[in-house]
Length: 315
Ligand SMILES: Cc1cc2nc3c(=O)[nH]c(=O)nc-3n(C[C@H](O)[C@H](O)[C@H](O)COP(=O)(O)OP(=O)(O)OC[C@H]3O[C@@H](n4cnc5c(N)ncnc54)[C@H](O)[C@@H]3O)c2cc1C
Image (cartoon, rainbow, N blue to C red; front, side, top):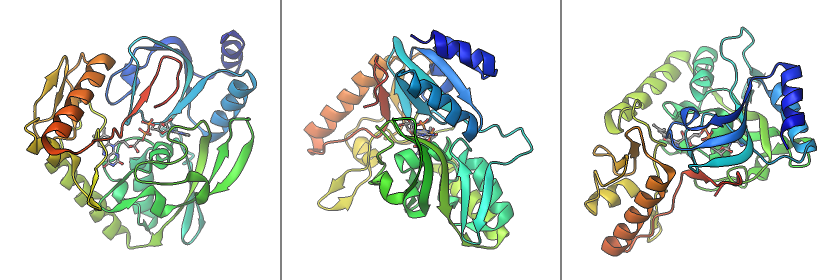
């Protein structure tokens, strides 16, 4: 099924591997193998690959930094496209559109975008400081912190839809909600984004980026430990957003362990993979936490992290 695409990728000298282990590409390090793993380091290349994949009617899944996702343990029969901009080249895939908006390719890492913002005096995106992954992934999940999220700064995007058509859409197309957008479980692919910013002194932006990062380093488990960040969404209790981590801790579940996976001692909403956790371990720990929390506090916790099934569908 994948042979014509493989031949084309080879001819185009685009990086790919067949029957590739996906775990090493994910922050959580959980997942088996995928039929084909293709790396795209620019939006133009991503568009060309997606047109070929869609024309060939192949099942596909585009991921960015892989920091909010875990795959099934066996073989997932799908083309996984890693959209990660190449930061080694001299051409930076970020441009000013006017004095209050910029365009950025979806595969640019948040931290690369923030360095550019600090150098340019483009303020308002510092909430992304310390959130791993790409700006495309951040938009797809409406990532946020410190009271801001992508929904506050995104004005539009160039996408390739499930029919292989390149389209320009506005923010309404995203259907943003708390840690959610139509891209999180959908099949449209983000090529580039348009973001709003406020002109701010470069020094102030750098300070805010540093302060936000320091807060994270002080309150979250080490970035060296494999995780996907906050595992559950913060629930609304009587109309007030409450901390899922605090609820898990109050239920006495810190350090609860299944196989190679445990609830972090430093933060109840971080699940840590100690090196050999399987997808089965993850599903089992998720269920154990959900039922213990429901029994002890009556709160229903909803997963924030994305799972990928054997057929490549996200859920
Ligand atoms: C230590 C740590 C701390 C974290 N802190 C936070 C935090 O404070 N706030 C927060 O919101 N999250 C946090 N996260 C979770 C995660 O980093 C964010 O959700 C991040 O924005 C996901 O980006 P990504 O590129 O890694 O997306 P991925 O995990 O690669 O993908 C996530 C989703 O986006 C889709 N996607 C990715 N790229 C594209 C594209 N080009 N086109 C279409 N769809 C695409 C994927 O298909 C998938 O549905 C944290 C994670 C870790 C490990």
